[in-house]
Length: 276
Image (cartoon, rainbow, N blue to C red; front, side, top):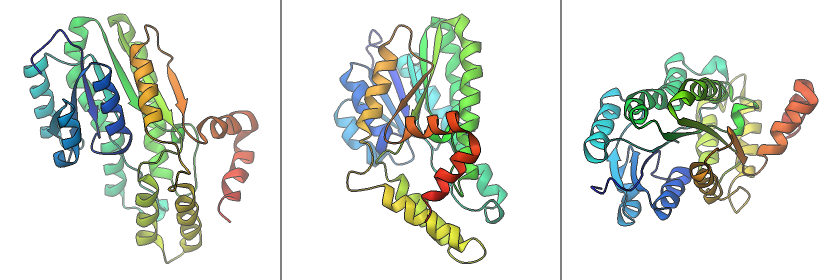
């Protein structure tokens, strides 16, 4: 990682799914790629391709700082930052503890924000760079029992828009990518967590419906391959003037447009029709 003539990228949440595919694509595109996740052993395949793997829990301040220090020492900073780390917390608002909800925000919003803060000085010094924030179609729409997850994704959208305006004078671009239904293991995590937390009690009927709908939507090729998102990120990073938003993956564009064009009441009916 000593050749500073090559551009450098950092991809968070690179141990699986979209993050892993994004890292592979950026390596292929000729970047020096740092990859960060809690489990470095799950990134051994990326290391073999030339990536530099770093252990980082995106909710841990000390580990975020250590990651940034390593990158600054070895590469002087990054040209591309892909904030991809995140997870989906689903369940009734009444039954999810506030500490658990705060952790959802720590991972999906504040971790990305802190990492960005620490890397910005070196990007400003070069007066260039691209920050890619992976949100979700869930940053524009909503689903049953997804209050805390959608809250973080809506927040990341607004945060990214403001950041784009702040950094434009310094030549730094901010891009939002809004994936749809992607085959990443997201569905199993959501469904299992739901049933464990709220499989009985006042919200049991809703919980069972959402879990079933989620399981039915993922797996066996029903979702979009994460390489599609990797290609979108590659396109955005290469563009001289990238779009502010890229929507990609199954259901993303139609779901966003249904809410935009027909309003909340119609969208409510569309969502609830999937819960039968």
